[in-house]
Image (cartoon, rainbow, N blue to C red; front, side, top):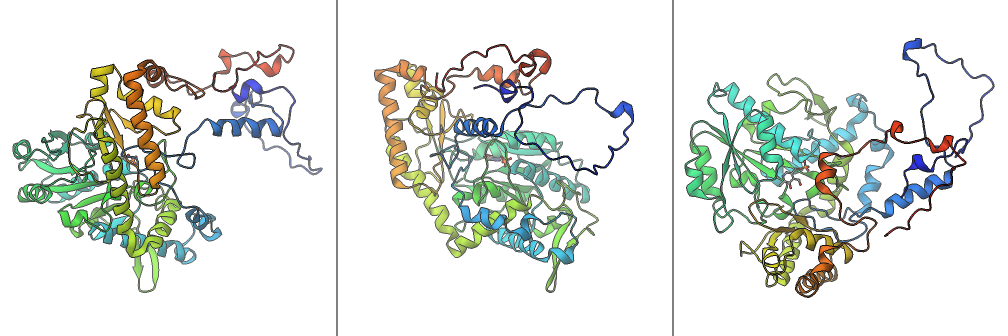
Length: 501
Ligand SMILES: Cc1ncc(COP(=O)(O)O)c(C=O)c1O
């Protein structure tokens, strides 16, 4: 497919605007600030623009296109009604600088959402400000620092313990927050290894960062003992709430002993996401940490709501205004729609994952053989050993069957990992079709391994050089490297290969 610049021809236009007779004179700009040449914008008729972008959309895969079992990412279907609610003019057109008196509805929604999240996490105070889980992590660790600094323990408490199954953002956040990272290992049942942990928790520990259920999809069987161990030495427990979809209304991080939690609104509630955004990563904390939360806080005075900046111990702002408001509206609508049945959502997510696990575990290896929560991790190491087929080959072949591949090679402690998260929104027929495809691929691995090595066969691109793409990404069209086809209309353009070739 050509770039839109390559389709451009000089003088082609989508629309011509009438020039008003009394056009105001161009503003006087200093010559040094004026551009010497007009920008090289693509010139195309409207139908070609529509076709170009429509063609691009057909090369994408999303939850609206098909099953998307990307482990850890919780790619669930987002009900359309939430889009309608977020697009109500009172929400959509609200200016972030609107005064409190004229934004009572929006402030009330944010205040209610804070209370709902406090209830779901069993904690006392919430800030909606962080824009993603990872930003919530950094915010939570900044709260930890502010808390210990205030108690005169900032210099002593330098270490944060992170499980070896952790999502990559956890160690990154620890380092960004200026802490020393201490890694703790996983035991043969997929829990934190308590013996290893005991050697790593002391008076210098600021806290633990853990997701429960873990990225293995397993609920830690010793969570209460772990919480006790950290609290006994005065440390705090941080809950990476990215896996909250497994436990809503069933178990609560505050009850497990956690002091700080981030919630990925886009994963647990409702928000179309993927490829890094857009999301929301609110932070919930115990009362003792509330003074440090970002400003402004959304507070209630009787029947009125307002933004409160008067928080002298606050860590400050972590994002513009009050956070990603559209995400709040969708999540609020989603939680209200489930109401007291929110628990059913998590139960179905867990049931769907266990159903798929039961269908696949005889054929793919299961490193930690337990009932799973909302996701599970298989290993393709048996296929690799016997047929030279890797997790990557399985993932690429799944695309030929019309499915988005699961997460692969994560968590790092599982060789040839295939991390599958079906979510609660899929039907049994879809789960069966996916399981059938996985089983068929395992048979193909034995009978026609070359089919998998060259997969995908039916997509617009086959295997990409992912290392080169990551290390030498070309994200900019450099005009200097390309002749301007618009300036050379006589040169016949080469015929374009049809999609799929
Ligand atoms: C376990 C876990 N922690 C943290 C994150 C980071 O969240 P975000 O992508 O919103 O920054 C993710 C994202 O998938 C995750 O799965």
